[in-house]
Length: 102
Figure 1 (cartoon, rainbow, N blue to C red):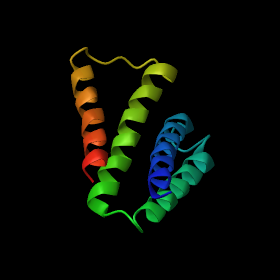
Figure 2: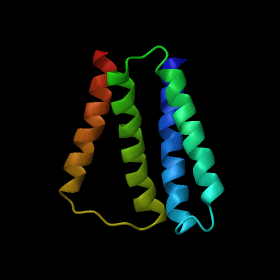
Figure 3: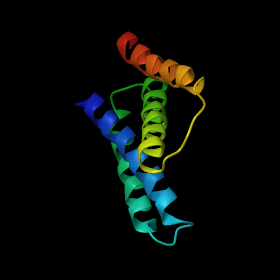
């Protein structure tokens, strides 16, 4: 269950970052941003009850980073340089590596 909490925390990190973008300076989606933050931190706190911080935090931020990239590409039509895909892949490999070796 601990790993599920950590994944949920990472997904809510993507939610609050997306809502912050949509809030346009905290004018529209500010409440959704705050709710996403509270849920993200709350689930991270549950995960860190049983996981070391040195494992939980990088995975949480990694899920948020990769998720934000995906949201940016799909919903906001962001563009990234082709070489950036190599670094995104390395990030995903790092997240998987931390999980597998912990």
